[in-house]
Length: 163
Image (cartoon, rainbow, N blue to C red; front, side, top):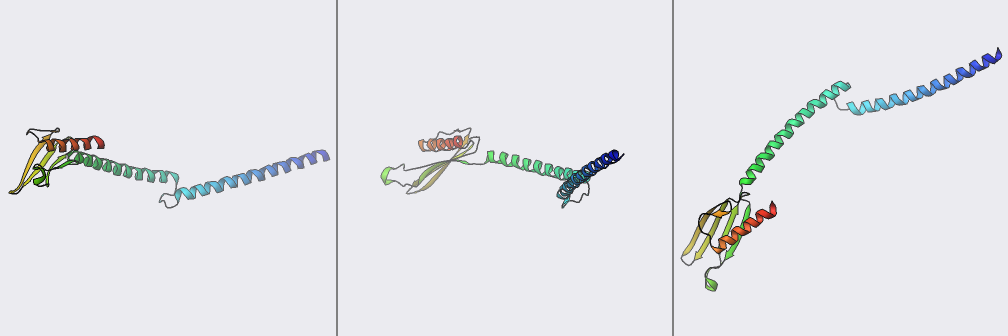
């Protein structure tokens, strides 16, 4: 009988040690969960996981609307930029040789679709003349001078380098 009592004490001791170890492991797990809970809910209105998820869904919906608004604004800006005169070619020239004025120039201004104007000036002793020629698809319906063609070519090259 003493033998059975000894085995019973050993078995109870083993169960007690295992229970203590499992209790310590459970406490460690609870502490980790408390830290995670604190991290999840710090600064949040929600007091449970379901409330937190609903709060985050509401914020996500708001962000989706903001992103959609920014996307629309970006498309509008892109559409406007295609219409802007942002490709430039400038040629300065002296049509009268050494005796003439050096302030003459041809300026080509195009948008992304090669639509725009070529502005040329001719400075003489009697005054300055300004010529404007419309350009559509990179071509003018009025014959261009050599300087104007050169300015248009420079503008088209600026189209190629930025596209």
